[in-house]
Length: 313
Image (tube, rainbow, N blue to C red; front, side, top):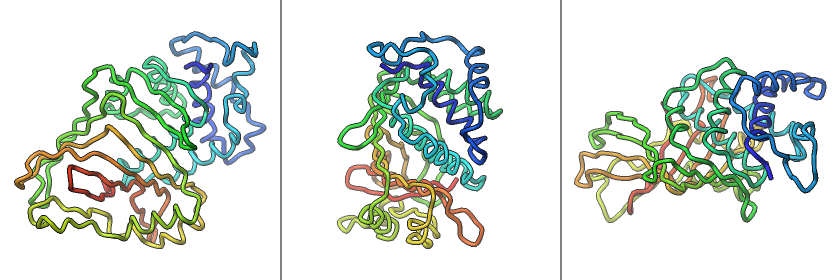
C-alpha cells in the first residue's frame, strides 16, 4: 500500500527532474537533495509500499515500483508544461500545470494523500524550486482533508475530500465589464468533488477539440441579451489548432469535473448563477506570432445555460 511519504518522494523527484530533464537524467543523483528536504519537513510514518513484498527503504526510490511505467516521459511532460507557462496568462497556465501534476499523481496507483502529506508537498516544492506559492493556493490546501487517486475504466481520477463538509470557497471578487455580469464572486470545491483525466491521443479525440473550439453555443429559447456572454473564448484560441495537435510534444488533456463551480452575480433576471465546470481542455505551449494563447479552455453550465470560456488573466 502506498503511503504519503513515498508519494512525497516521488513528486519531489519529478520536481527536481524539471531542473535536470534537459541533461542526462540517468546520471543525475537526486537522492541527496530529496533526503535533505525530507529531513527538514515533518515526518510521516515510513511504512513499506507493499508489506506483502517486504521491500526495503531503498526500493521506495524505484519509481517504476510505484506504477509509473515511463518516468522520463512524466518528467518531460511536466517540464514542458512548466516551460510553456506565460506571464500573460499566469492564472490559466498555473491551473493547467496543476492538472498535469494531479493527472500523473493519479497514474501512480490507488492511494490517498492526507492533509499533512499535501502540506509537506507544498513545503517541499517551495524549498526545491525557491518559489513561494500564492496564499490562495495554501488556503485551498488548508481546507483539504485528503485526496484519493486512482483509475477507473481507463480514466485516471482525483477525488477531493474537504475538512469543512460545505466545501472550500476560493474568493475571486472580480467585477464584470460587459454590462451583464456584476461580479464573479467565488469558486467553490464541494466535498467529494471529482476530477477525471483523459489524454487526447486519437484522431477522434483531436477532432472533438477542434469542434469544441470552433462551434458557438446558443440558446434559442432565451434572448442572448438576457444572458451573460455564452462564448468567451480568446480570439486566437483556434489558431492552427490542427498543426498544434499534430506536432506538439505536450500531450493535451480532456478533463471533466464534478462538484466544482463558480458563483456569478449577474445584472440579468437570472441574478445569482452557479456555473459548474463540466469540461476542460488543456492546450499548453501555443503561440501566434510569438504571443502566447491561453492554455486552459473550459465549458461551464448553470441550469440550461452553457458557457465556453478561456482563462485569459
